[in-house]
Length: 118
Image (cartoon, rainbow, N blue to C red; front, side):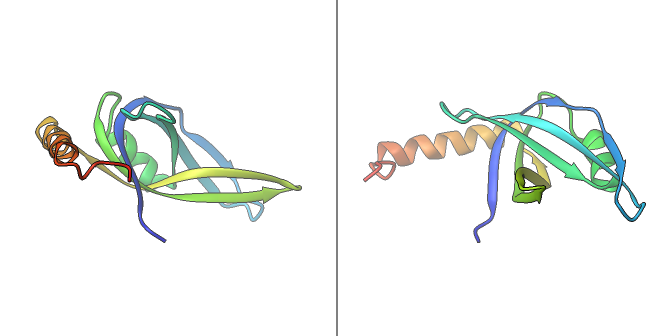
């Protein structure tokens, strides 16, 4: 399967959630929202799972950061119901210069006719 990734701006970082597994092992996760420039389907809710990833999310990222998120899609079943989550496993900051360069490259490829949908 190809690597899933999306770029956007972090709009919110939600509170840390904690719990225990059936075996009594403690866990923690944190959700954050990312908004892209796309016209449709432009809001994503990602989760990071585990103490280290939760600590790194709040330590290195803040609301307003422009980032690229690499993630997996996970689905779990519980009592005949299915729950899907977007699990972020890498978050890379994109600086303004890099973001502008990518936008310029995309515009140039569209002008060359390579951005056509057919």
